[in-house]
Length: 210
Image (cartoon, rainbow, N blue to C red; front, side, top):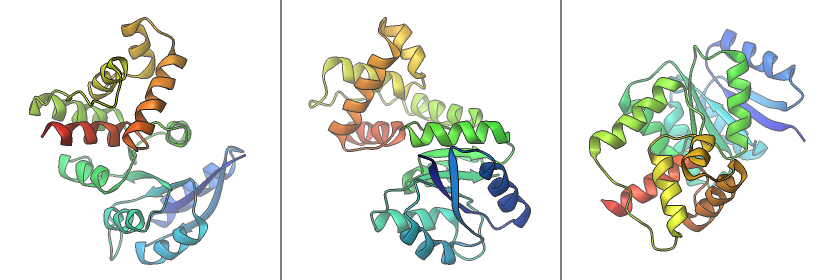
């Protein structure tokens, strides 16, 4: 079964180039492309794709507001930001609106494809410097993740390591457990917290702390 994709991007060459690249990969099906948010909103509500690749700087309504409106309508799609913006304000605003991944437009095509698969499988793929910004934000705020009573000690431990920016394999090595065990713990964390990805889980824990 292929991953259904919708692309929202106002630059014709970027939109068509990305569409043509993904069309060559059997793992993806591009259901539609849109050049603005106003047309994308009803299209995404109708198609209900697995993933929406969303630019921020669109004519008219911007991509962040588009995601916010779709989330308000309980659209289950995952949102991958695809943009030139890497300042803190745009990154955090996009994640707060409901984006689960954040890639810069200088990302290689192969890395984009791999990131889309990660997003579909519950990850939160981000360009390296974007991920570092998030890690630094958590460190700068000096917000320790508050233990959440509904989580086990191990789950709280893994949640803290996620907040520190560790990858699944790094968590497995740190705790001397298998990657599959880490995945199962993270799946349990997401279910207990009623979230869908790393970013939402960390934000929920931080909100409890604040």
